[in-house]
Length: 163
Image (tube, rainbow, N blue to C red; front, side, top):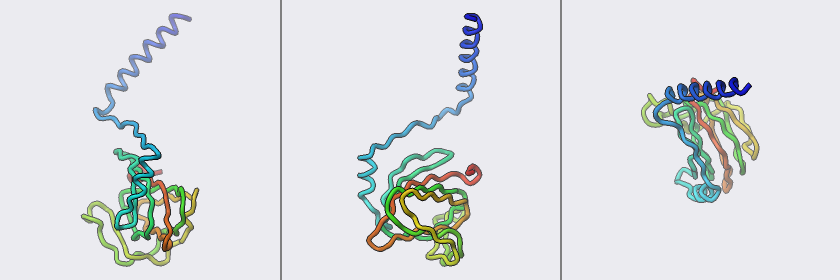
């Protein structure tokens, strides 16, 4: 029994070494953001009404915590799918529809688009606990009531990896 156990430990060490040898040179690292740092980031709203704290930026996903005190523009991400979890506040979320005033956000090749408004989409309440999964290429629009806000976490996954 002791010989079998020693052989298993030795084999595990060899296999682990082989796996680590094949791992990429740069590794994603653990990231922690304290509640105080998030609170501080949420206090500084930009002109577009967003306060943002980066949660993660890796090759296979990005994450941000956002507090919005103004309505955003309609957004379309051709290369990213969004997973959104509402923490606090209230807004409406329009998904789909026809986008008016669609323009590229930067170079058209990056697949990011904005619009002034949309019609014909499905409207949902953004309230604490609600979750939204927005497939790549789908118009979506957050509308915050005057004097209100919506606080959420958004994870973005490359479209070919989102499931």
